Image: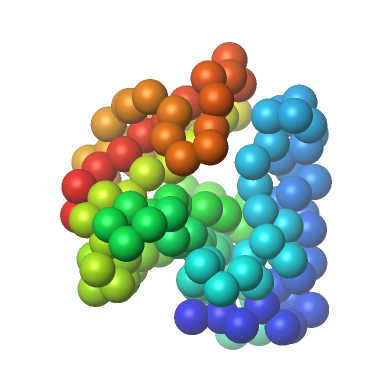
Length: 147
């Protein structure tokens, strides 16, 4: 787990928000900023290589049984090297140990997000209707899986 107090993780997450806003209309960006990730219902993990942040991901409690996957990101220079898969494996184990029976997510619908959607499919996520407070959005797809 990461307590989100370091400048390196803050910079990594600022870049994540910048990238999301550059690829998706503002009203369709659902990424959590640093303050959103610090909320008590969110558990956040980061992956490091020495002093460099190379990936992150989070789980947000929706209710006692259901959580949402948030803030999955891999450093640009480490994409397609297995970091996202390692994080996903860890997060699935942790979410199950936290007592969740279902994990859902929202991600983008454009070509930019295709690698992410493929990752989620490989880990057993299937497409679903919007969940929690989400509404249908042409820029979003929703996925879920049992744990």
